[in-house]
Length: 265
Image (tube, rainbow, N blue to C red; front, side, top):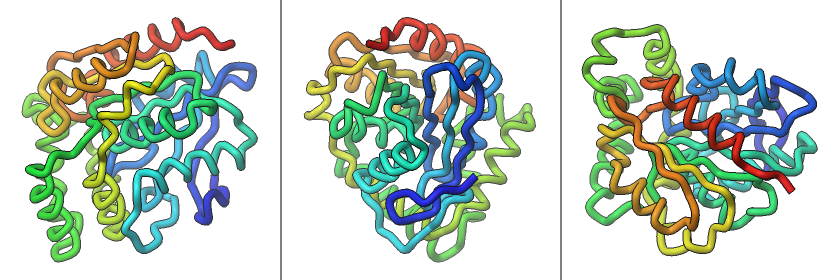
């Protein structure tokens, strides 16, 4: 389905129980709502589930960038407004987790809770060259030149050797990502700087991270956990960056346990 939100057409899917609270799912850079397939059966049985394609990805518009995290966050607010949804449990992974931080800081009244997965709250100066290199590669050689090193960062070697169908879906979505969308969102990510503000978050919060995540490591998750009062931290063994895909059972159990503990006033 598509809807006009914050000046663009956004692709989304709304499914599950109509009489239950809404869980919103926000994917990583270079992916799409398909990334959340391993969570859908579990979530739809208990919640109303909203998953969407971020600006520049999947079936959503990819206008010329650069974008900002604030813009990507306001896209979510526009989507919720357009669908008549007041509040959600927001679950974001990687870039989605950065969007979740913005929403928790700027629009806490729209969230019941926030789940921040395999993400960071700041990009240090030494991380800028790697982002610029990926931007240059995308512009010069296209997404195909980035797919293999990205898959190696996202998944452990043993998972890649197994080559499950979910991995092929992720690869396909990465290759289908518009260069303009990838670059625009990369420019948003490189300006991430929420760490010193996170002590102001008062929402129920869960932080999940793959133990072997090289891009947003356990230390980045711990830094977020330390700043958000009463937050939970779950470290998933044998998982890199897309921990929801590589370890879906452990991820789902942690997510469901947390969501079941959140009191909605």
